[in-house]
Image (cartoon, rainbow, N blue to C red; front, top):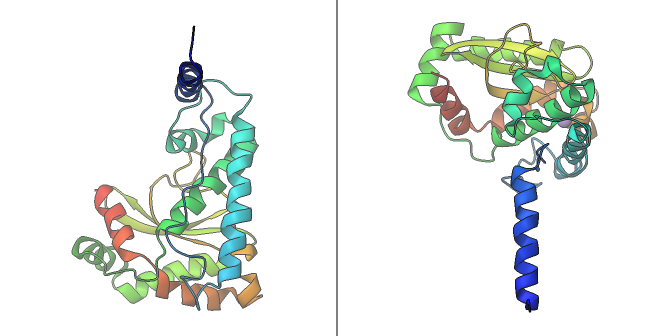
Length: 224
Ligand code: MN3
């Protein structure tokens, strides 16, 4: 006769097998790597809380909902994004929203550290100077009409700045230039409106204080 514990462990095994071999995959929000208030005064705690716990949570849930009816979905979100033209628009919007925010939280930090020698050298080589790179990134972020993102991206080490509408990103096969993502800024109004209202350029300026250059540098070195 099975003991209660045996029954529980058989069930756990079956449930576990369903989870690992099941299709489609279920994506989870990673924990925010710092407190909601950690990026103050540059990004206020209430904006961070709403952005993470409502907006990002909703993209994550809606991505999982949109994948429900599909089969043969890769478990790696990057593999989905690289072939996004084959998926319904809800996967494009919510898969982009899930992934872009995940990266956004990672490339910000209250103590960002220094740019590595290789990235600093590549910025000088491809933009002329760090100030010229900043100017190009700020321009991409401030001139993106409506909602979207600005990006620093790498093509096997060659750096460029670009922007995308909505929740698209330059990993997607529909993007004009498909690249490895290094640095991004969310310029949807929900990312800054509580503190900066219509002053998007002030939010973009403040962003430089909280870039996690250590993380951006390691993404760059992995792209080589
Ligand atoms: Mn957002």
